[in-house]
Length: 445
Picture (cartoon, rainbow, N blue to C red):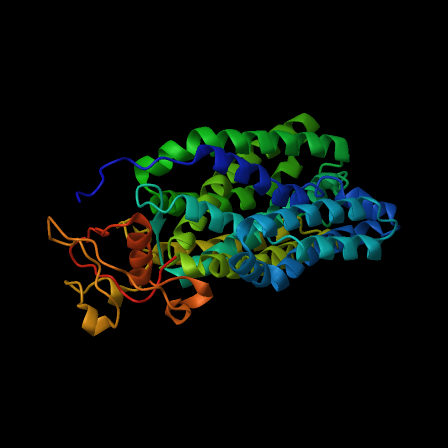
């Protein structure tokens, strides 16, 4: 049978539903950032300690997610993607309500920890997307270990930046810098914008809308034209530049000018993040050689990246507190810039390769895919499929399939499955084989 030349199409309806489910994670994780500093202040925390406790509150979410990410991935492999995704959505809703009703700092930290532990949908949704879209034309592949390192460092500095921004913008401005003996421009100064959560929320809303536009209108054509890996290499250079420039916006004298300059820097960072995260996820997902391990792989990725998402805000909050006390506003931002430079290094070691669905195979091991001929029934211990190369073959009786012939998870092996199909149809089964492939006893998902 000739190989189909049809262009693969995206399952749009299923992907739209998965995209809506995917929104739950960033909403659950980052929607608290604009009002978190004021919320912590309302618990009676001193102003100079707000940054540290905001970082801890953000970090426990990701630490808990790291502890349970692999378990969620294995559960989806065992019980199916849909029931686990639905369970995760219910947990996200419940823990969000619990955090909203927090009356003190310990209760808020416990609620955030539970929210992270019960939010395992990130890796599962990536797995589902990869199963829906396995073609080479739609996904590439790269080395797993380097991708995990890249993804972890990316999550560390990117999430820390988003969590630190509201604290910086809410922090009081520094008055009379010209006459202050502790100020030595351009590097030694302190202070923020001194704006409230309403204004911060508006800036973050525009930030999110801009990200949506970049995600759907700018990222796809550029990634298709220049490639996923090349796009990732370029945007990793933008992160440290944006981080280094951020604290100097506090030196602008006009509040409106401060906010405009800050928003422009946020757009640069948003552009880089919108490109970096999907590119890294695509490369990571396609490093799986088989769909059998994809759920577990993405669970590992969720856990490992969650460590970065927990470490980043904790480091950023601690550095902000030190900088506020000693008058070094640039300290947390330049530390994040250092992590961004460190995270850009492994990207240049990556090699873009074909995805596991690109060659038309189903993810079987290479030793099962390179044998040039179909083995005889005597060699495999099973009945050889009929209809291969013979234009006319008489139907023959097919024996009942013994339960012992089933493979892992109760699935029939390839040969026995062909026999069952031939029996139900009342005739021979013709199975075209491509050159270099053979029917084996092992089943592939």
